[in-house]
Image (cartoon, rainbow, N blue to C red):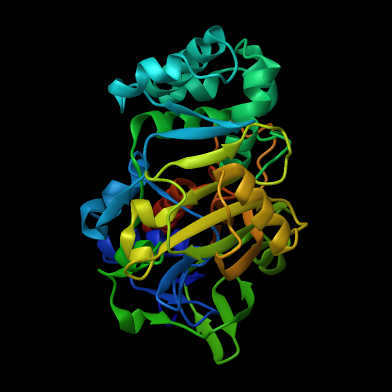
Length: 411
C-alpha cells in the first residue's frame, strides 16, 4: 500500500495550488518542501522595521487564478498608481492608463516621451490585449517582444525611453527577447487589473493560498533527493505514492526529472533604501528614459503600502536586471539623478540578488501551456510550464493537479 496518493515536491505557489485542488477533490496528498518556509521565490524579510520582499514583486488583481484561490481583499492591498514616471533630462513625464485614471489622460497625451502617434498606438495595443479573448491573442503570429512592439508601429524613441526599461523589469529581460505571446498576456493583465502590495509583504500571498490546507500534511525542511514512479526519496526516508508532482524551480526540477529540457533563468537585483523624506508623493513606478540602461525601475513602495516602513520612514526599492549587480554607491548616485534630489543620507538596508528570478520565455511559447504529465505517474508544475509570472505558477499547479486527478480516476 502507498503512504499517500500524491506527493507534491515543492511548497511554492505552484505546489500550493496543486495541493489546494487535490484537497478540494478529497484525494490524499502530502507536500514536502526543502526550505523552512512555504512560498518558494515569493518571500519577505523583516529588517529593522521594514518589509523587504525577496526582490521587488507586485500582485496583479487581473490574474485569473488568484481570485479563485483566495480573496485578494483579505491581503489588505495597498495600490500603485496605474502608470509610470519617465525621467528624461531634467523632467519627469507622467503616463497613466486612461482606463484606470481618466483624469490623467490629457497629461499623458502631452507627455514628452515618444510622439503623440506613439502614445496612441501604445494605447491601442494595450486596449486590444485587454479586450480580445486570450485565445485570439495566443493564436496571433509569435515573435519576440521587441519585434512585436516595432510591428505595432512604435518608434525607437518610445521603445527605448519607456518600454524597454519598464518591460525589462516586468519580464526580467533587458533584450526584450521574451515571446510576444507573454507580452500580450502581460499587457492584458496590466490593462485589466490593479497593481498592489499586501500589507504584510508578498509572503502573505503563499500564506493565504496555504491557509485552508491541513498543516500536518506539509513537511518543511525536507529536501528531496530522488523521485521515481511510485516513490519520493527524502533525507528522512522514502514515501510511497500513486503520483508525484514536482513543483520546484526549473534547475531543481531538471535535476529530479532528467527528461525535462533545461530552462535558462533570468536574474535581477533589488536595492532597498530607507529615508525620512519620500522622494515622490505618489506610489508610482519610475523608469529611466535617458537610456543609461542601468536601473530598470525604482519606486517608493511605502507610498503604496505604508506598512513596509516604520512610522515616519519610507522604503525605496530599485531593481537592476541581469547577473552583474553594480556597487550600491553607483545605484545611489543613479537614484539621485532619477529622483532629482540628494540621496547621501539614505540608509542602505539590503541588496537582494535573485539569480533565478524568472524562467526565460523566448519564442516559441505557443499557447503558454507546456505538458505537465510526463507519464508513469510523474507530473511537473511551475511558471516554466505556463507564463513566467505568479499567474503562471498558480495556473500550472492547478493544471498539474487536474492531470493527476484524471490519471487517478482512470485507474
